[in-house]
Length: 161
Image (tube, rainbow, N blue to C red):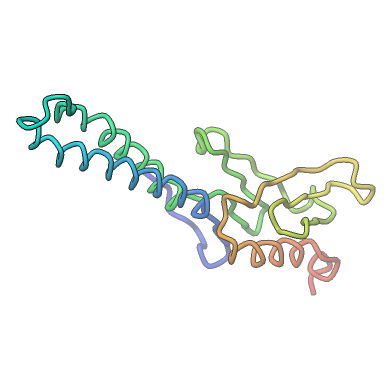
């Protein structure tokens, strides 16, 4: 059972919905292959070289599996910005591998031009930090994330202004 969120209005959640699109497409393609195998099975009397309809279970089963992964990626968080810090959830076993980076640990952030990678720097010399891929996040959400993090790490927000 999931824990109840204390103050959901104070956090920003970013899912892997950009990454989920690939899994949705693959699931749809495998479902189409499975349905095609089932549809051509009625012609086995005419052409006995056609595959048996049970072969459709393989792509249909894979389609269901990829669909479940896509639903999970769409619904569950990749990054959560909270008042305490930034919660980072990995692809595999997100509940067990979650990493919390406190805002006090970070000095500033930077992103590349295409907003596909975000770097959280722990010091001003940029010798230590965390690289985050932003590709799992939808393109239109990446600018919001970059602005939210840079705004939170700005000197004005650190001084309480």
